[in-house]
Amino acid sequence: MNLLRVENLKVDYLTPDGVLQAVDNVSFEIKQGEILGLVGESGSGKSTAAMAAMRILGPPALIAGGRVIFKERDVLKMTAEELRRWHWQDVSIVMQSALNALNPVLVIQEHFVDTINAHCPEQSNGEVLERAAKLLKMVDIDPRYLKSYPHELSGGMRQRIVIALALALYPQLLIMDEPTTALDVVVEREIIKRVLQLQKEMGFAILFITHDLSLLLEFATQLGVLYAGRLVEIGPVEVFRRGGVHPYTQGLFQAVPQLHGAREAFKSIPGSPPSMKNPPPGCRFHPRCPLAEERCSKEQPELKQIAQEHQLACHVRSRD
Ligand code: SF4
Image (cartoon, rainbow, N blue to C red; front, side, top):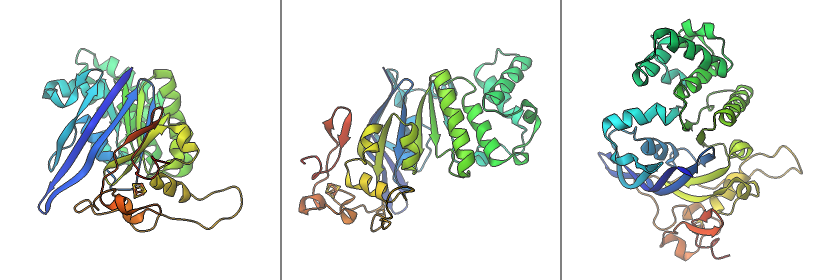
């Protein structure tokens, strides 16, 4: 059963220089217990799409079209009160920077008390603190740190606490927006391992946003690749373990340094991502694409089904 269905989502930023289309016609689905990874360069629209789906974007961002359905409920039509209840109880988010996600003048305990009280006012203080201690243990943090301020903890501990806080009301969907970007690789692995254990135990689904394609290959069940605000390829992770089909996906793979096998020249994708104020016509990847042909600069490729659950937006590769 689909937990979250995003259909043709469009998000614009209204800037003094005009309208910037940050997310253009993006669609994806997440089933119960599934892990969908969204990958793309900075500015490709992955965080904007996730935050728009949660309805936590404020001006100058504007949801310009599309639908977001969570278990048959239309999120874009929810009232402010329905949205308040939906957040945290059904869906919660782990932001990129744990230090900014925690209030520097509150001890950790207060974050849990505020969150749980706002949604479960019937719980006594004792019950809330007991639950906060249990949540910290879940992410391998000693409950004595409930009395600490965020600045007294390491980056890895803060990120674990933000994850525990996001799981405080046992949501069905956890959005993780580059949750380990600021951490070293050892701490990153430990945190991911713990989140995956919790996901198995608790059964929530994850929308994991990152620019690290190789990380997603290790645990995602399906993967979507965004380029300049559009989804260019989405499908089961096995497709991507074989290198993907879209020229941009393949370019991302070639840009990952290989630790094994023969030495090869390092290949990066030529050029840079386009300005979203004035994106190229047709396929937005065409100025950088090694397979581009005349049609690519004129016609926008639509996302088409090319195999079971595998969709692709490319004139050349979808006819091969
Ligand atoms: Fe390249 Fe054309 Fe495919 Fe775009 S549509 S990715 S430019 S081949």
